[in-house]
Image (tube, rainbow, N blue to C red; front, side):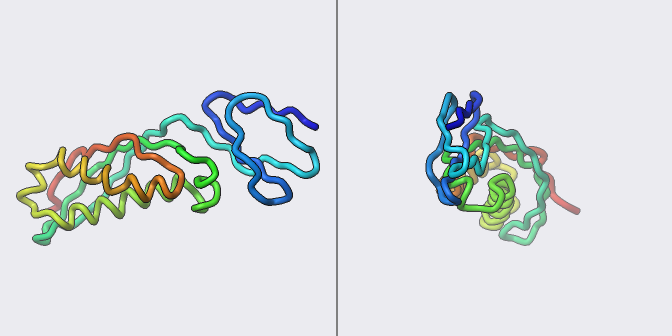
Length: 148
């Protein structure tokens, strides 16, 4: 038996003979050398990301926005097996929900309700992110400008 030490702010997914066995929380763990392997290592620290995206409103006016969001791993098992890359999944989720939410609003309403739009985006992403093992902690729209 080997002793594995999972560092603080980390979770590891352990597989036995290629199948999920358990999620290892920070601390000491016993691992069988030929049967078990650490398949995935995740940091549970919140990750800050920012991306720029263009979307078209309900009245066909294009807008460019910078979206700043913070996310973290909520369920390591789901994060390991529900998508090929959890970071790419979260980024694509933010992009698609942003376009969807902007498409529902008119250009006049969009400028006046930026805070409400951010809150609606955050609510719309809770369930899909949780299903993939992630949690969107915060989201804000910055530099919302009309594209000429």
